[in-house]
Length: 186
Image 1 (cartoon, rainbow, N blue to C red):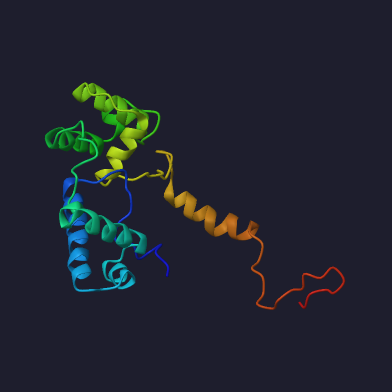
Image 2 (cartoon, one colour; image 1 turned 45 degrees about the vertical axis):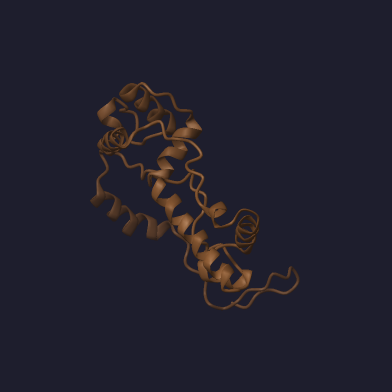
């Protein structure tokens, strides 16, 4: 059984309260199916989770009842409140140039860490900033670096005339031989 694309959720730097509630509902659904006599494999397939998770939930329910499947709450409380996050999100969307980073147009974790410190006087580690951003839907982005002076028409002309002349012709459909003693068919 493959789980790389069929998993319901993956660890994304921590869970928001809504995600924790959703995961709790999944565990409680599994508990109902435990009572109905469903197999571990069937429950895992229906919930799109790993069989080991279902086995762990079954053991926890057997030892502590259904209450053992309830969420224990957040592992840690976020340092930023919802209002602070909304403000940080808005500032990130304004871009690095608005905060004086003129050398390139990308937010690094170090820059976001500095921004959080300037705005809210709250300290985060670089790793913590990465987890915070990931938890709130931000992902690593590699910018398409293009010069401000770039002339798209000149680039298109160069691709059409210079590059097409310099580029080697495409290979034919006829297969070649990897043998050193037998030449390929042309």
